[in-house]
Image (cartoon, rainbow, N blue to C red):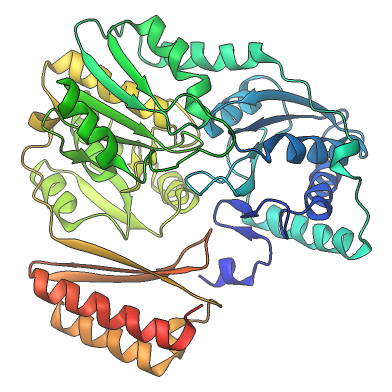
Length: 454
């Protein structure tokens, strides 16, 4: 928490805010381009940067403003246009780019946007580099110099780069055919809408694609990975065997079984871990999850002889633990899954293909593959906060947390954390007793609201 709270601009997943206002006003966006450009000039003779964006209305002007900042430092800029976040990680790594920038606010509403950064190796930039960039960005912002976005020419998109990404996804699951499967996929009116039609056309099968008509305002609007129950209803209504749900930038995936049951990242980790172990690919029989993953996942993995290590929430922290322990699989309950033998970052479309390949090879449904996953009751209460003070330093909040931890020490878990991308405190309680779960979650949330409520 200390590293994240020390930051003024960068959260756990880049810079994020309401487009047009700080820190996503034209001045800060332009300064971000300058800062990244200056950092790259010291590392390569003639560096190039690849840009990508999701479908938000603000994406094009942010792209042209970032590009102008980069070009003023001598950086060459190319754009893949509307593509998933992981496409930029892939393109940066395989096409000789010194860095990649993604303009997206992931699962947030359309008014929000953000800037995510990848190095030329396809991994997110290290904390130290982001902090150094942040210092330079704030200096440029203080100078107040930035072009009017309306005066800048749009960045020209190279659609061939998108085709390269689609080919990469198909090559990750050689021989996969979806013939005979009835699938419903919710593209959230986001980045996957630009890729999924061609991807699934080439894989065959009866794939019904929904929410593939973005208009700049409808991304994540009542659909996508935060609303998996929407595609669950569609699966039942259409008699499909499987539902896929992506978020706005398609770096996460949630699933739905044939009976409308939502299958989250925990269940994806379970079936993937067992498959990798059976094929001798699960290094040290270890899976990295997060503090938010359900106790039921840990128990199911243990029955299969697989250890689970918990990292802090955020894919960069999961990846850190995976690299430290050389783990072959990791991920989050939200559906952000990491397969390091295939990609450097979480990829919702790739996750979907991996699961579909598993179903094709085993002949089993996702319900059968996760039948023994007994989920402990869990509730998450989000509290809007005006500041992110350390909760242990607030006596009333700390007392409520201690009370919950003492009562649930043998039969549940208490995880309280600040969101890395929003002004929220997240209160997660997991317990065998639903009454105790709701009681403690509400009491802790009320204590936080009384002290820090927005």
